[in-house]
Image (tube, rainbow, N blue to C red; front, side, top):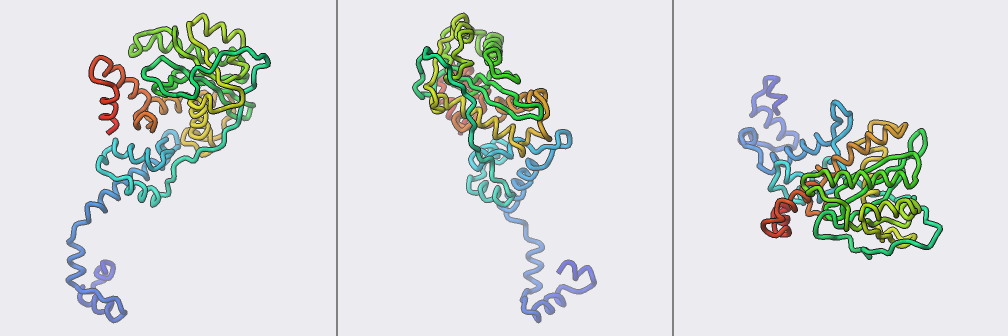
Length: 325
């Protein structure tokens, strides 16, 4: 009707012509519709759809979408609440994500990289699949995975604090040997000794949990743990569930950062240097921005900071639940 009005026709003439064609509409209805303000739901939907659209658009510098496109319905609901849409419901998020064509990341199958130690002497499993602890620096879990590049495999090792799921350190190498995983461990020890929040503590008394790979059961690595005062703990052979906390991080890294359609990639990975750049960016996002359901949808850094802020005040559980809400 607006188009026809631009051609010089009156509203009544247009309504009469439409009625003759079987589409009955009155001039009063048209004018009421033109003056009526859009519904608040329509405005909110449009704002959220714009936000979801912005997440999917390639950044001018990196030419990649935002990492939050990896979120499914639950995490996107929390993320939107933290970014200006406090009253949005999960049902609205689900409806608008479907409308925007966003499904979140679907985890893929993991490929095993563990090569068991030939001897039968190894530390016991001190966790027994209990992957929860009440403070930082009580249990560290570690593992490594591989990344295919044009120059061959690049291996990536992570050391993770079980309390906050924070990746404290990482290392890369074109060989998966003891020196490679030991580098990641030493970087974790250095990080904790120099971090103000952790009171500069050493590794003495920390349980160090890994799988039964030969890199972690070697004499050299075992001696390093003993010298640093860490308590070794090793899962049973051929059972990924005994190191599930670390396996989960490996899976997230492969699916969120390494996958071909990852928002952290701009093209093929040619060398170890490309993998290093990938790990640097993903680990920073993982620690400081990625929402974790096991942490009440906080980030690892937020979870640790909350612990140290509340350690001399009210109980941590109460403070965490308030922040999560």
